Length: 281
Image (cartoon, rainbow, N blue to C red; front, top):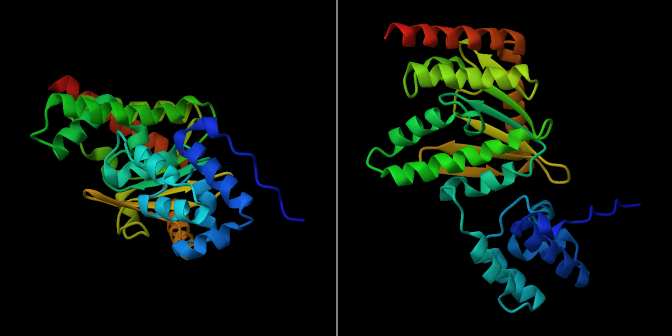
């Protein structure tokens, strides 16, 4: 007997509201998720992610839903409202998905992951990205990044597992004081058993993540998503075969990296080095 879909909570977010409405109209029309996905050339799993509020509804899909269900411009109008975001366009959907994930795994080759950044570290990063931006613009970007970190206020969910290249620890973003603070912030989260972090040491040599950063997000009732990011662009990947390949990449990174205990010791040692350097300056 097929499992009954979990009841949706339209009050949890605007995307969840729109997703609940999509499920209502689909079921009223007697269509499966796969059948609704066919004219949009997407999978039934993708329709499921829209209904659960995991994926953001794009305008071209909204127009098609209005045609299929005879809802005027309901989906299109609400979709346009949801396009407004405090995050850059290339990251907005990933940030929204991140907020609903049960497990977040992230490999960072160059920078501390956004969820784990301190204010001073984030400010230095954004200023480097946008050297001519006003202070108000930088303030907005930093505030949005720190807002994401509120996910960690819950004692257990989401599970956050980071794999950091040793270069992330040693590049003095924002100076020695800011870097020491940033590393102490991460080690404090580890010691509170809130996050898991492994370090890929320089001595590891070649490894599976050399091509760039990788974020995996796992959900309660939706397939895992992968997010790939480069300068000024990002891509959410939901193709099952591709996601499985990225999951293997992350598993191999974990196998190559130092143990969580050894990683913590290294991070605290590097933080201490930055603190000593700051005292001497």
